[in-house]
Length: 198
Ligand SMILES: [Zn+2]
Image 1 (cartoon, rainbow, N blue to C red):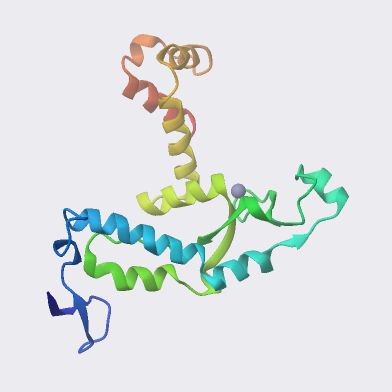
Image 2: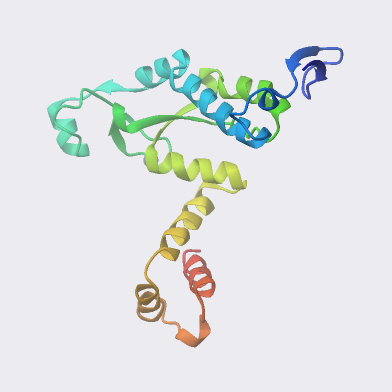
């Protein structure tokens, strides 16, 4: 099961010995995609513990005074806080996350793993501080290759799509001023809501 595999992105002649198909060597994983689910989880754990990432988080947060806590609505026990790069609001350190400015991208096939890992464990220059809601929007934007603003609207439209149908219809009529026969089904209602955000 060992073989020479050339990995895209490495310079010519660099060949790395990697195990071809680990998922075939055990019953635990049925196929490559199940293996990749496991591997992504393992990589995420490495990122969670990644020392430069945790240093960046600590370095980006500052002690907060009693007055600052009151001003920003922080929990009384908050010791240090930092500012989300997207919404510019101040959060306690425990509510902040570290985002990749240039995203780590995806790992859809096994031989993308080395490149993915190297991009994931990036330098501090590529890190930025975000709150959880903004991080979710940024991740959605990265995944779907759209702007942060569009991703924010898409996510709002997704949330609208989860409302009960009656509530959606009510909103469509009373807020958007549309007739219900113009938006006959759930997809059309969501579309109308999404367009109203532009
Ligand atoms: Zn934010």
